[in-house]
Length: 252
Image (cartoon, rainbow, N blue to C red; front, side, top):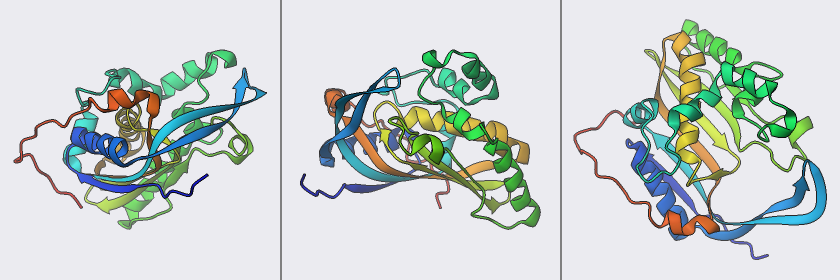
């Protein structure tokens, strides 16, 4: 296997939709074609076969400002994004949905949902809320306010470990916070936009709202942001949208 570095891009933008376009365009144009995967499983049992998923791979870092957050919080998606069900997806990031998920037979569940990984066995959303409250009370930012999805006993050999790895919240003062996300792997076409809608909805509802805070800036580190090669024809149809240059806001 040839050692080819993963192409890297920094996207710094105030527009949620065109941030997605830039990410898709970079992946389809400059991404490295790779085969990822591992052993194939059937009903949780290894079959002895190898399952491969050809992708066009990149590594991308995002820095999104307040205008982009406004679009995320109002459930706006790029018109070329295929999964136009943001409110339905956001509901998966609630205690109500988690209760329904746990009541579903195990053979009918998803491999995981992020909300469940964040609240079971330890409710880390409560931890984020309380740790943010301490930052506010001290008027002092902290890099200790974080939650993780990776459970070593469960995921170290899991064939479907979580893509989202970590959430960190840093208080900036005057009711504003910086939210940082880290992702192991992610589909830029069908996951990037909708993931952010759900996560921001969850944080606003359970962590930031109770502390009278809002997100001023959101950063993301995606170690593998990719397009599945079978979806490349769709990726080529994604186009930028026109924006009003007067719609600007502070971007740290």
